[in-house]
Length: 531
View 1 (tube, rainbow, N blue to C red):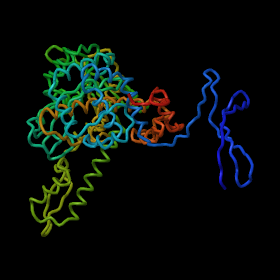
View 2: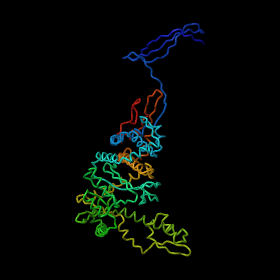
View 3: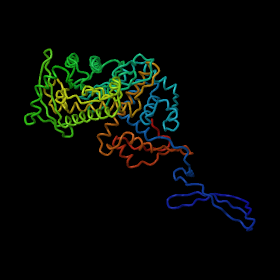
């Protein structure tokens, strides 16, 4: 069929309250030998301007990661970290925040940032090669003054916490070129050089406040004096410092006594501890006359308070016994001894050196003292040492001595404050395992300092997320990993006409944003971005 178009004109057609514009084309149809018309839709007429516009049917062009980026960016704003980073690192703050978001959402080494950013909805042209990331870490590490300003600003907006938990963990490395890496007490039981990281976490906010890096050979007990000085410099006041027994020494408790209130467990090896256990044992065993306190969760423990002086300073010792814990520890001890004896005697060990090697390889050196070794025929056998006096050990099981100078603090307050120390243990576990920083990668001292500072900021944000999850009934059954997997389903889709939209938000995702008091990610066009 041959169509010859002869002329065209526009017409308007009103349907309801809207006016639609069409182009009418007249043409001669040779086959039918008559004039005909066809109508082509142009668009809708705008009442105010009189102009005609037509919606284009754009098709999706690209979908990028958005949910986790938006989530962490909002959290960084909410807790005030973004303002402190902008203030102290104005030249690199966008790069630094992008690296933080990558680390928190992906839990991967920083050198993989470059492959991630191509598929992430972040505004601006942020391209960071592995070499550039190393330069950023080195610049963070070199400028100690800026790091101190950051920590001072951070502690100033988190100064209203009445409990401060302090502890130290170790990080192993394969590097041998940095003098901070030394051999010492490795908390992960790895035969590698290490550095030690001391962190203070505040309660009730559960946020890390300060950190300090120590050479790997430094022991916990020698760090207290300088930590007290730092707390004074940062003007933290009216708090209780809560420590582990590794920090106990007479010098330390006298120094802490001058600086602040404290709760510190006493090791059982001191003469004072032995006297306290002996003087309270009869009372604690008689539940009719001992005081009962309840741990969080309503589990009862029994306690007795005693006072004593060291160099004219009055201290109060709260001695606790947890019978449920005592039975559990005792059962575990006897079960382990039985299993070691059985495993050893099932082996054919004919050399004396192999006896000690057995305990070394099995990482059970502390149980060696409970056994006698006898020779039966050509092989050695283990027997439980009946002469070994276990009574002193059993008497200590389930017991804790918590030392304080606060005469008005009740035993219930003391023990429940102390057992909140699990927040710092969880923080260390998250940093090493959840955030994949168990083995440190650094080429020089400045790079190491920068990485540890970056890790500390990451830990702040991670700790905030964990505390929100713990407190909210709707999401407390989730792990951080599960929440991230949910949020990763939210994508930002770019259209061929440069418009953008966010994929639909599920009920679970809404619950997550509601728990963190973050507005749902909504927007149209180029307004959508993480920054």
